Every structure is written in C-alpha cells, then in structure tokens.
Length: 168
Image 1: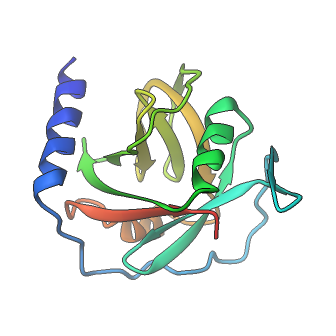
Image 2 (image 1 turned 45 degrees about the horizontal axis):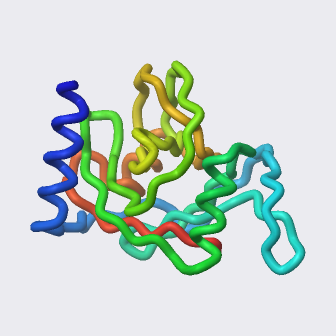
Image 3 (image 1 turned 120 degrees about the vertical axis):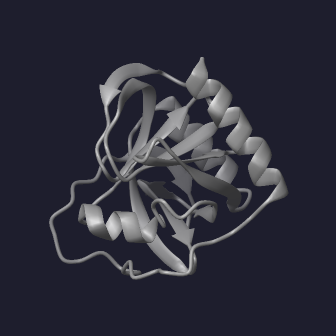
C-alpha cells in the first residue's frame, strides 16, 4: 500500500515538474554481445516485432520483448505512435512512470535484475537499474549493458527523466 501511494505521488509530481539529468555517458548502441530474442507475434509491415526502443536524453537502447498479452497490446499502441512519459527514481533500484495506457497483465512473483522492463499495476512501466522482488508482468529486457551503463542511461538517482518508447 505504501509503495502504491508513493507511486501515485510520483506520478502526480511528474505532471507538475520535469527535470532531465545532464550526465548521459550511456552508449547509444549496445556493446558487442550475444543477446537472445523472444519473438512476439505482432505484425508490423508483414514482419514480426520482437523489440522496441527506449530513448532518454537522446540516447536510445533496444528492449528485447517477451511474448505475452501485455507486449502484444503495447505494440498495438506503439503502431499508432510513440509513447512519451516521465519516469522518476523509486527505492534506489528503479525508474517508474505512468504509461498513459492500461495493458493486460499476468503478474507473477519475480525477482528483477538491472535491465528488466516491467509492467506494474497494468499502467506503469518500471525500468530497473537494481533488483527487487514483487508481483510484476515482465515486458522485456535491455540486454548487453553493464549495471553502471544502465544506471548512466536511466540517470539513476537523478530524478525525473522523459522517456520515449518507440518501434524505431
């Protein structure tokens, strides 16, 4: 209950204030590595969409998507245009922001890791730069980034950031 109240307060505060971090040493392309892809059967010009992108302060990272009803609904929304929202730090391990849409969820108890992209309460996206155990729906993962690179990309601990979620 306390976490929900804090999340509501953060959401309301983000409507009245916006401040991006200025230190953005995160890479705009991932370092070399072997990531795995989970295919999501959603059509986009005849091709299956298995990823989406997050942009913060001009830096863009790829999110490899899970195959579930939440990601399929999210992709349908993104076909109509980018989603821009404000996210703020919470608990010293995540950035959370109101999506502006409600998605179906299939919450299960899980322990997150840095790089996880999670749906919380059907209408908030949580970007993890640390770990937490809670009941969530996994949307995807930012792969091939170290914890320090993720913290820099997400402006961890620096307050509000504007996040753009897109197909390209």
